[in-house]
Structures are given as C-alpha cells and as structure tokens.
Length: 140
Length: 112
Image 1 (spheres, rainbow over the protein chains, first blue to last red):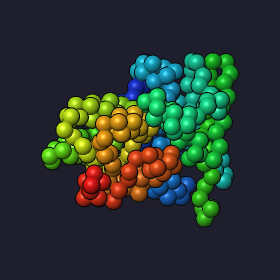
Image 2 (image 1 turned 90 degrees about the vertical axis):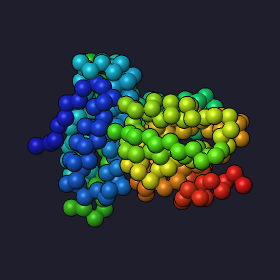
Image 3 (image 1 turned 30 degrees about the vertical axis):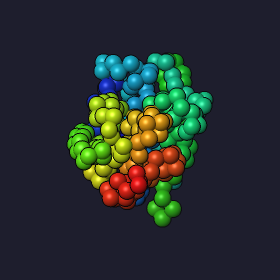
C-alpha cells in the first residue's frame, strides 16, 4: 500500500510533511542528500499551495501519496481549488530575485532542478501534481 | 523549529540559526536581521553549523538583503553549512551571490 498523508493547509504542518517524506523515502535506497532534496522539492510545492491556493486556511486539505513506479518514485500531491501548474510558471532569473527583493520565486526553481520529471493535471476541480525521481542506479 | 541566537562582537553581527527554516518561520529570520542592523554593523555573519534545513522561504530572506548589504557596505557571509544545506545553495547558484565560507574567522576576515 502506498503511504498517504492528509495535510491541513497551514504552514505549521510543513514539519509533519518533512517527516512523512523522509520516512517513506527510506525504502527506495536514496542517499541522505537525495532524501533531503526530494523532501525540499515536495515541501516547496506544498508550501506554495498552502499559501497561494489555499490562503493558509487550516480547514482545507492537501492529499499526498508516495507511489513506487518500479524504477522511480512519484510523490503525488492532490488538492482542490484553483490549480497551480508549475510547468507553466516562468522561473525568475537570480538577478531578478535580488533586484525585486522577492522572497518567492526560488522554490519552483528548486523543484525543477531537483526532480527528474514533473507532471500536472487538473480535472473536475481537482489538481494533481506528480514529482518524480528515479531510484539510485544501484537500487533494485 | 527555529531558534536564532544573536551575538554582537563590535561591528560584527553573528546570527546563529538552530533548527529548520521554512515558510512557517522565515519571517522570524527576516525580523532578526532587520532588528539587528544597527548603523555601526559592517559584517553580518550567519552561523549555519546547527542549521538542519532551509527552504526557499529562508533563502529568499537572504536574497532580499543582498543589494541592501552591498549598498551599505556590509560584508555578508554564511559559514558552517552542512553538506546537505550547502548543496541547496549550490543548486540555485546562491553560492555565487553570497559568500559561503568554511568558518567564522574567514567570515570576519572578509572586511579586511
């Protein structure tokens, strides 16, 4: 059975999210460094949803599921409401982040650099973002 | 959980970050830097030895000060990052914008 987590849309839930991801990546043979980075990528997407799509409303929820796809793992993030397709998001240049004193914009860049594949689909008011990472070469 | 210890040594301000910086507490980091920026400060050093994790929310705080520090002639650096946290700075290329140094004495020596 794939590990699942239901998260309240509050930034205080992010620590719980990190523990869940770290714990459940254990079985796939990732290094500590990989686990740290995948956890960060997932957190960036979830934090973005919590803040921008759900306005930190703790009564709203996000579903997470970690799926073994054979040679890769997918972290599936599902929410309802206004979808945020990060594939369409134009990542800012570093210089732009500095000049505009933006405190955001770096997160999606991290996700794109860390994950091997990102999928997004939106239907019937439900949005699914899949963050996919290949297993380490020496695993399985 | 994030704990921030501030140490002032003359014109040097050292902020030790203990724990994890994420979107729930990055505002504390921002406030801490803001409150501590007395006009006589010329060196701001982040002690990252006990920093276990930082997300873009925290990195964005540092980035928002880069130009300010430059304009005010403040030398800004970070030392003691773990390999995992240091790698996050490298992925984004932030190590080309912010001085990441091995230890405190190197950080303080930057003003010379």
